[in-house]
Amino acid sequence: MEKILAPGESARTKRVFSVLAGVVRTSMNVLMGKTWKGFETLPQGGYILCPNHLTEIDPLVVGHAIYSNGRLPRWLAKESLFKIPVLGWLLRETGQVPVSRSASNAGESLAAAKKVLDAGGVIVIYPEGTLTRDPNLWPMVGRTGAARLALQTGAPVVPMAHWGDQELLPRYSKKMYLFPRKHVTVSVGQPVDLDDLRGGPRTRAVLQEATDRIMDGITALTAELRQEEAPAVRWDPSKHGQSKTGRNFDTPEN
Image 1 (tube, rainbow, N blue to C red):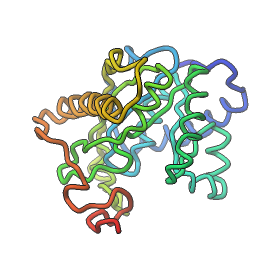
Image 2: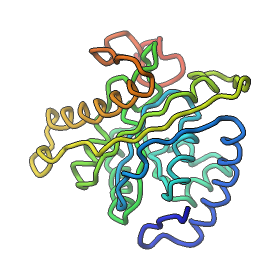
Image 3: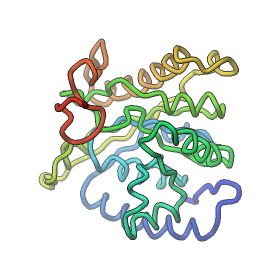
């Protein structure tokens, strides 16, 4: 499928994406079967894509799906990743957006993401901020970054859910389970309705309402894929003595 380049997208960027995609798509096709649902309804211009977060290979699954359906995805990626040799170069060459853990630098990350959206690009944000802490892998409570960016830019927010890749690489596992061959299903929904929240002050209550709606969309898609009923209340790490970051999340943050 021909890639839809945002205005100003360079041929160099397309070439780097093409090389990376060749490696990732070949690897993912060997490791897992795939089913994609709803991709024909994705917006043509800039939009924010909000997936659930199950395992550390989620970005490969999401990137594979988005690229194969004609778009060049950009992630809000941890700033530390840009300092890793080779990986950092690839992240910069493909226009990924560095994110600092520091709240004081959060505005810079959102400004960089806004430029991508204004140019008609696709920004991928995991609203949960990390792999879900829910013991049954349901989407947990979200953070407000995606909502803040959506209300600042007016860009549509598209919920996404995937299920199956956690069987290949369980959450925070160091071992892949290659056999039998796994299958992942990736589903996208209609843009989240935030129209009544746009234009007014971005108060904490407004941002939380927008975030809840985004998480509702992701959770509904997840329940559909799992053919199960989602929990009535989303998992909140802070109410279970869990840290918000890191592998050892059952150890509370100081």
